[in-house]
Amino acid sequence: IAAAAGCESLKLVDAVKEVAKHLYSVLKKKGYTVMSNHRLRNHALSLKAKELLSQMLLLPEDWGYTLRGFAQINKENVDAIREAVRELERAGYIERSCERGSLRGTVYTIYEQPQTEPTPENVPGFAYIG
Image (tube, rainbow, N blue to C red):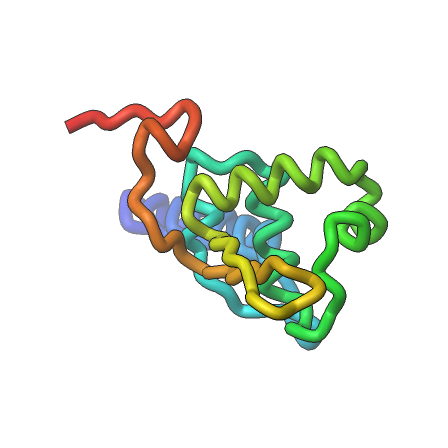
């Protein structure tokens, strides 16, 4: 009888696992992108900065990367996008440089992982615990 009760509890556990598996399943047939999880696990970044970086990495290089363009496709104002870009710069995910001889003048390089270590100077709210 004890063995039968053990089997019943195993069946119940298996049923719960099956239900949980279906609750968290995500169907990815087409139209999805594989990216590094680094920025999603970075607790120093705001949600807005994480989402903007994900979008920047998703869009093709020839897309018109402008603050106004990101504001339009995200239903945000330009100032909110500008602040998210600055946050990503401070965290090392975006580098800005001047391009000589260009009318546009500024070149932004976007990285999946930061190119600088976070410090109190470049990430507000950063605290080193060591």
